Length: 569
Image (cartoon, rainbow, N blue to C red):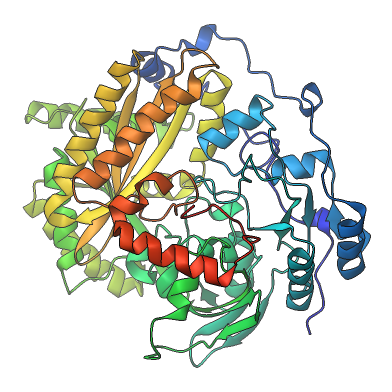
């Protein structure tokens, strides 16, 4: 039995009304092009607006916990009274993920149903004992990683009448062992991304899994939602990384050994990966790890338009002489957005760089490039020895040139690498001013990527016209495979009134999701199902597929005590 780490009070968490740390904010005043971009696309005049007022929890009525004394005492006997928390702010934090819907609700005090307690077990044995109490007393249990999910996976059902307990695994955050020969690590599921990398890096290893939510998501959460990191081209999706795990199930602990491959019937590992807490609580994960590369570089490239860029990315994915860490392409609208986010140059070096960029864009425009609407930026990451990185860069440079692109070098790549985890703070900033900014992502074969891209952009425009709101959308290709790639769409628009906000949001979001299905893509590549994507499950996996999932969950959890209502009703 392992010894628990720390206390409930030192577990990392989001602020109650938004993303991440209280003292981190998106700034627009040091980005000279951003106010003009925001005014042109969504009609807000930032310089004329007053500073945003931070929400205050004391302005809202927080419903009292429904957890009875009997259940509270039983949980406290197992965990200790200080790790069974019914504090208002902690319950609010754990009652919402970080989807736009969740953040709008929490910012407007829509606390129709909060979880009734948050428990912080420190060992697998404590998780088992808590689960027994949940079943004995007919409670509802929601496993909780970092709370960064944007699909409703940790949000309680507003119609649930039984007491709801959220289980935060943040005290279970250690790398328990490393098999240097096999390249496998046994890790507790509650570890956050930065903490996991720090523990592995100390011994020369990396997991290589870096989702956008990296700073505020956990290994257990990645596993439960079939996460994908931005470096999946080299290291794989979480389903590739996870080789074994421990699942605390109503019938006991299921242990899946850390093996390279098995042929023992349907993959139990695959059944648990992506199960979103409906089969039990993931407490340990056996993951494949890699020695840290001595050299790492991100190179930026520019293309005249989306089609030239996609042809390049397809060629890179299919070339057996290279194995890039990631290859990413922004479409024209996203490229314009990215350029608007550049900070005002202050140093001599940055001023020179800005002048060179202006000259380059003028030159490209003289050659017929549409540098305002169509031009696309791409990024490719290379890792390995210095000579291997140089060799692969040479191969990619030839592919880029052959498809009409040019190299911008490592300087622009460094900017991308430094800012890759900052986007969620922009979403909070937009909400301050009555603007929804959200994302939807999908995967499709290479043969249909351009069709999916074009059609989704059209349906967003039609949806915005239908609700008579200004707004915009953009997209990037973020993960490559032999057969296809992930397309990651972003959209933003100012809602008309708080009363109509979510109805307007649903009009746009539903149009995007339906377009994915209608054009041969999937409803989600890596954001999971939760409740947000549930309406399209039958269209994506067929009614038979849904019935198989329903049978699995009903057999495993007949009392619907384990995160009920997620994935399928």
